[in-house]
Amino acid sequence: MISLEDWALIRHLHLSEGLSQRAIARKLSIARDTVASALASDSPPKYERASSPSAISEFEPRIRALLSVYPGMP
Image (tube, rainbow, N blue to C red):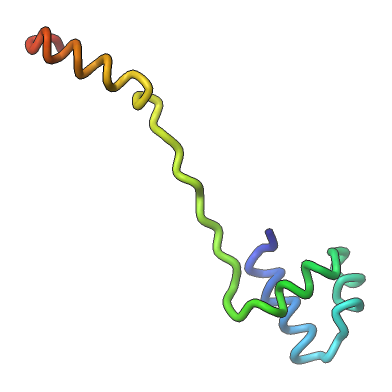
């Protein structure tokens, strides 16, 4: 995944300076497919972190069972 700065630079080089996709790829040392995908997208790339389970989620059923048996347990 390319950064927002790289995406903006690729689009600037192509749209404002008129460089070809191959020239941009060569100049930035990235793949031509990356340049093509950056030019094809109308919006900047977004990074969305995949949600991960909490550390306690594996033990939650057992904790709830213990608390139901021993309600005064801290």
